[in-house]
Every structure is written in structure tokens, then in C-alpha cells.
Length: 446
View: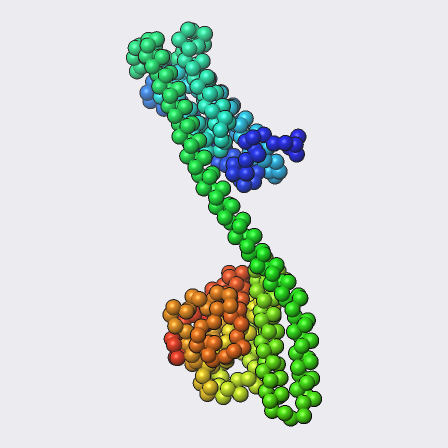
């Protein structure tokens, strides 16, 4: 049964990733086999009509028809879903054995040892080395050696008929020449099997190493996500409780400036801690598979709403807001929370790291199959060496730390992760103390 202990070849995780991947290779064999059938039929016509070689056309055609019928059977089998790797391996083995038997029949019908067609056995050995490993490769090789040897000896001792090619020399059938040819054939097949198996063994070792490294990275990423989830779950409630107590103490304070100053600083730090927890929560969602129902979202309406909600903050910095937003809907398809988080972080950064009294320029453009959203400020800017680092978690440039203590270093990493999940693009252009422009290009995919 397929659920029982698998064969050695099937038990190797580096042989195939899934049964479906082996099915794909089987489909490739089928296409290659159709080419062989067409080649045989073409060769028969050429040999009979042009070269005038006295070949048994009927037998060759029957061999080609058997190959075609079997190929149709393989096609019908492959139309069913691939559910068992064991079964797929067995089917491929059966195909290779039948191909070798039919090839031997064809070699016999076209001159046997006189015809270099027997070199096609080498192709089967190479294919076997690409699919199987260890003894399975040498089993296919051994079958090829046995079949061609029996065919050659059978013709030599007149056990089976020999179809002589007119252009072939009689010396071909001398025992010494025959033995030399068979010996060379055996050596070539065994060497081909050895080289192929060694090469694939090396490739599998590399693959094993890559798979192991990928698993380690995935485990590390999962551990980080689990830690973030723990922090957001366990830390948020006590921080909010502490903030409520500090705000209450501020309200009840009798005007003592020292107390007001200390409680005010505590309140700001607690607000910053809440922002960090929120960003960790967003980063956790970004580190897992994209979840949430995708919807059509009007970016024009969303951008206007976000700017209205930040009007008081913009006015407090005396920023000159210029918003180029279409009056008609500009729609993209995506998870609403993630798209809003992208826009919020970019707009907030444009406000936070701008110089007082300078311009904040928001642009939204509908350009056919894409939508472009950009935020341009005239603030502190970013040095070239920092423009890649700003997308690393918790990194803040020295200029950003001097400008504001409220940043968490998670906003832009969150933006980048959500942008990548949406198959969108993010571009940054910046010059220190001149300003920065962040541009996101969404695909509509409506």
C-alpha cells in the first residue's frame, strides 16, 4: 500500500518535491516519445523510398504503433491527479522498461549492431540518473546492457532474424569485432551511469543544504513572529493601564511643575510604547502569510480622509500642504488595513521629519493599469548610505533620532513588507536637509 513504508527510492526527500513534479517529468517523456514515433516513421519512409534499404517496414511500423498506443495510455493515466509518489515512480519505471524493450525491437529491425541507433540506450541511462539514485540507476543500466547483448548474440547465433544493412561491412559480424563493440557499449553505459549518479548526488547534497538553510531561516522568522505576537499580547494591557494612571495623576496634580514635567515625560514615553506595540502587531501580521479579505479601495477617498485626520498636526507644524488628488475614484484591490497602514506611515513620516513651515506634497495619480502614490517633504532627508538601512527593523537614522523621539524604526519596514505582499513597488529619493520623496506604485488588479 502507498501509505506503508516506502521504497528506498521513494523515501528520499531530495528525489522529488512532490508527486506532481514527477508527473511533470512524465509528461516531458511523453512528448519526447511522440517525437521518437514521428522520427521512426520518417526514417522508415526515407530508408524505403530514398535510400532503398531492405528494412522490414511492417515490423518497424508495428513497433512505432505499439509505442504510440502505450503513450496514449500514459496520457490517460496522467490526466488523473498525482496523489502518490510511490505510484508515480513505479509508472515511470514501467515506462522506461517498456521503452528499452521497444528500442531493442527497433534496433533488431534496423540492422542490430550494424546500426548506431543502439547508442540511444545511453540517453535512457542519463535520464535514469536524473530521476533515480543508487541501485535504481544501475538497474536501468543493467537492463539496457542485457537487452542489447541478448539482441546482438541472438542475431549472431541466428536465434532471432538479422536484417542486414547493405552498406554495412561483413567484418561487423566477426566475433572479435562484436565482442569489442559490446565491451565498449558496456563500459560507456556503466561510466554514463556513474557520472550521472555522481553528478546528481552532488546536486542533491547542495539541494539538501539549501533546504536545511531555508528551514532554519523559516524557523528563525517564525520565532521572531511568535515573540512579537507575545509582546503585543502581553505588554499592551499593562502599558495602557499605566498610561491611564499617569494621565489621571496629571489631571489631579495641583500645579506642581516638577510633577507635571515628570508625568508629562512619562505620558509621552508610554504613548511611544503603545506605538511600538501597534507597530509590532502590524509587523507580525506582515511576517505571516497575507490574510484578510481583498476589497476594492478608493485611494482618493482614503487619502483625503487621512489628511483631514492629521490637519491639526499639520497646522501645528505650520506645514504648507499641497495635495494633488483626483476628484474621481482611484481604485485598487487589496486588504484595506494594509493599504491604509502604507499610506498612514508615509504621510506621518512626511509630517514628522519635515521642517516647520515647509511644504508637504501628496500626489495620487491613476496611470492606466497602475496607481502612483507619493509623499514629498522638505525636511531632514536621508543620507545615501542610510537609504537601504531605513527598511531594516528598528533602525532610525541619527538625524531622525535627533528630530523626534516618537519614532519606532518599524514604520518603513512595515510599509516595505506590505508593499511586497501586494506585488507593488516602493521607491525612495532623498537628499540630506533637502527632503525626501517616497513613491508607491500599486497594480490595480481590479
